[in-house]
Amino acid sequence: MSFWISLLVVSIVVTVLIALYGIAVRPNLVKKVICLVMFSDMINVAVIFIGYRNISNPVPPVLTDYSARGVEMLVSHAVDPLPQAFTITAIVIGLAVTVLMSYGVIHINRKYGTVDARKLARWEE
Image (cartoon, rainbow, N blue to C red):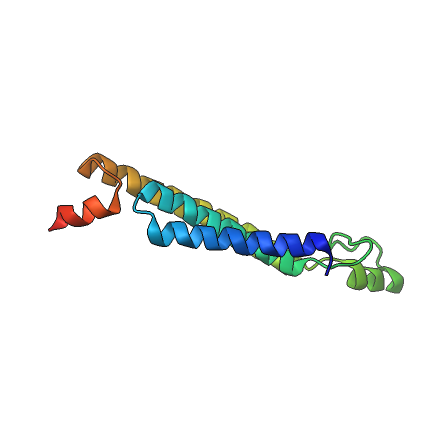
């Protein structure tokens, strides 16, 4: 495995761990939303990385030459399109969920005057 691929894997793992730490430990709801977005973005990067092929000349998965040689070239050099399709779907769904979470945090801030989860837990008692 090359240095750059190893660096990418380490970066993904470290960022996912930082995001999980922020989700679990930080009491501020805005920071939790930001960490959830970081987490989902890094999962998307990991899925795209899984579809990457470490070959000399990767090509987009588009068949332009319908001969047997063209199909063979596509199969041997094309990147996997399925992770790309899943990722674009996850990005759209993630955007909708982020907007919904942001609306919830804004509504909580307007109603209770704080976005601190510890204060909100005491507020209910």
